[in-house]
Image 1: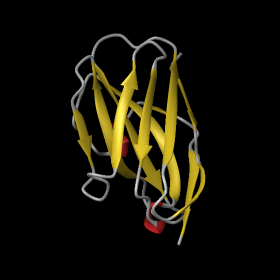
Image 2 (image 1 turned 90 degrees about the vertical axis):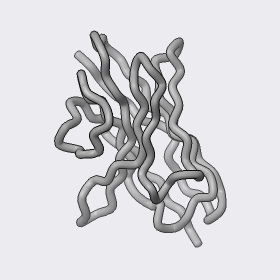
Image 3 (image 1 turned 180 degrees about the horizontal axis):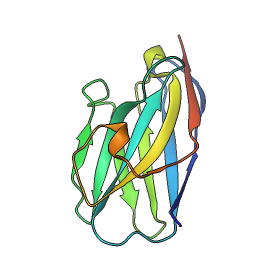
Image 4 (image 1 turned 60 degrees about the vertical axis):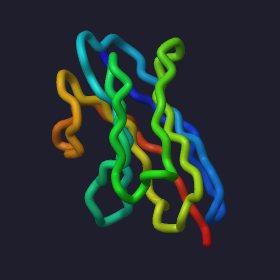
Length: 124
């Protein structure tokens, strides 16, 4: 059974940095992609970034391009999200997700597995 566990959330001042990590346990066969989404209360969960297995193609939401970087560590079976130049509007719950057999989707309904989320709070 596939499980995703996020870590690394916290509180930071505007302009600061945080690094989120998502650990994947269990086996996924074939091609898949992993992504980060974020959600604030009362709003939909929005796509942030994704990365493909086994290739390393990445995709980013326009709002985070140039500030966030998604990467993977094959040895540790993790995917990280480095967040720099954080803004108060980046405040949200951040969720790791995995989608099997497809790449490029930014719709949360397409994703097959989800973590429990980690909170990021950016103060002004």
